[in-house]
Image 1: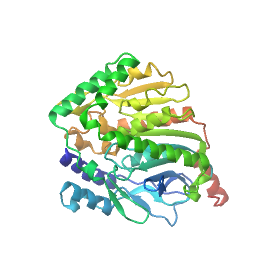
Image 2: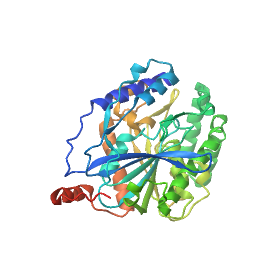
Image 3: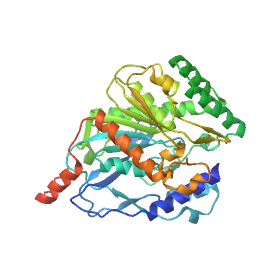
Image 4: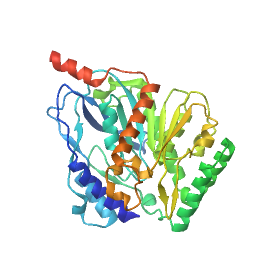
Length: 395
């Protein structure tokens, strides 16, 4: 499992480096990015990457798709030479660029298990360019690697690193239980099937981690509601905290779904390729709106499990939920690894055309949030106005 994953990362960095970069113009929206650390308790903290529209990238540097500290740590972790990880290739996100004028809807993203805040970076850029502020969380100790504001690196905890690799028998059992979840026809049957999956020994170590991710996400929501000083001063006035949605992939998608169920506020949420966990199944009310996006080709050992209708049993008990299946997409197609077609050979990606899928996925996400969050002035209009008047009203 580890070698294909490592090769995927190396191929991903190479693919990102070769992607053409857009012409940087002050009359069209670009993408700014900031990184900041948040202290939740005396001992617990998390990190946030913020992507947002910007009209001014002068005197800024692009954030690399990957960096030497990330490459070195991953190389050590998987026992291969660091040069195989590639160099630092620039992205389309500009570090600490000033936000475009105006306030933008906020989306909070949680990555999948063992990944990190930049694992869906190209998707974050697409959303920011479309007029959203995207806040993507790193969870130190669980995320693959986190570099804090002082430059210190925080690797995964020993408990996470020493988690046994699933055997073929484990994968076959997980596949059977996922199929049982998918085939559930009633909310009660769905709940029982999900509970059976969570009762597996290999799922038990995740329980505390799950609750910690939920706590991190809910804490960030509290900061947004109060315009806390723990948020960057340069961002606060550009956050439309009356319009907040949640988004997540896999384990992080389940986290985002539970956070939505635990609030009565309107928090439109997209859960990518994961069934809901039992933590949120008893918390049903009319306000939350959830959209499930699934694939059909995901392999668990020698078994391929279709995600089509994976949450149908749950949706029957939640009138504000909807679901869409992307035929031919696998679990990792919902991350930036989608951009590395050779990973189809390793079984990590589905048969779907990656470019077509990514465009359809992001269009579905944009359409959903534009429907359920208030509309705003498009950032290109603001940037054009700023360019025409010569006014640098960025804060």
